[in-house]
Length: 319
Ligand code: DP6
Image 1: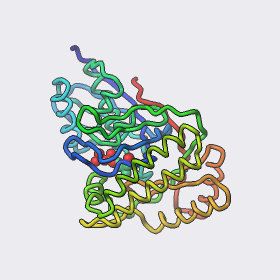
Image 2: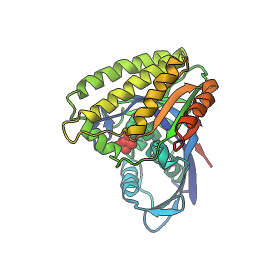
Image 3: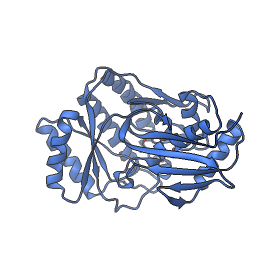
């Protein structure tokens, strides 16, 4: 197959409403649970690949350690077809401080750009399956709005698909708390969480929550979506606190203050539910109508925290 001189793809990041937090197979990146996410319009990665002498990586014009990218490209060379070394040039519109996984959009964009470069004719599901080897959450960044990553049981059966829902005015208020906490990577956080005595119960609960979440989404019931997502996220963070090997937390004092505020907003009648990932930041699930009022009310109380509004986003695209 002939290669293109260069190829560019754009992938948006996603926020998990039912989390991926543990690996059944760390080499193949098979998860212990299925997960469900919302793709976000405001945050994305644009990646261009072009032929070079060695695999290299540039993010926002700065040279980076290319080890993880090089290992991932080698997996693609082995799994799909050999191709020459690549210069990977990425522009990341995922603010690091927002605590949104930039690995999701990065590995999705890279997989799609490499496929385009090589003229591989692959379905979105095939791309999702390949991207999984780079980073689990990347499986879900090929689809607009909602996606489900079915955990599967082997390399061929573990990938994401689009989850169709009625239109709904869902939005997120993203609280950008500055990350003073020393970061435990997602991969390491999961490894520790899986040593929690509560882990097996969380896996079972997560399967029930996924069924509930699908039903709530089909009914466009944003309050129920938020309530299930909040419970799932708190369950995930409980695993970190109760890990037998190096228990830890991603929360800091401001995380707790915002969680109190989310509860107060709810008591005042707002749609407001919290979800947190591998960092101290809180993402508040709400409606488009209420997002601005929630943002303004929090901005008055937390002068040092920045607040963004994020909305449902598109699937993968090419330039
Ligand atoms: C908390 O996809 O970053 O955001 O597969 O090890 O690269 P690796 O992990 P990653 O984990 C994301 C974890 C999460 C929850 C989620 O996105 O489902």
